[in-house]
Image (cartoon, rainbow, N blue to C red; front, side, top):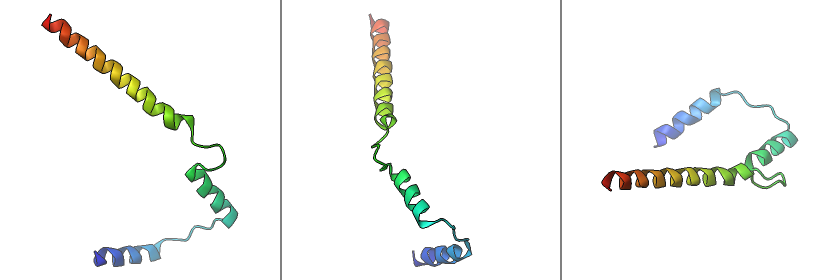
Length: 71
């Protein structure tokens, strides 16, 4: 594991530094965390609900087809 750490340290020395103003860097960090006062996006909660509805409807359809075959 120490070999990986030293290799990463060597590689990081070859990377160029990003020149971003501190205020802009803070704003980017806030946007990445989603804490600009708006709260989490509705899509964050809506997408799992839509996937659950679709999956459940597909399961019900498949069960109905299995029942149809055996009756």
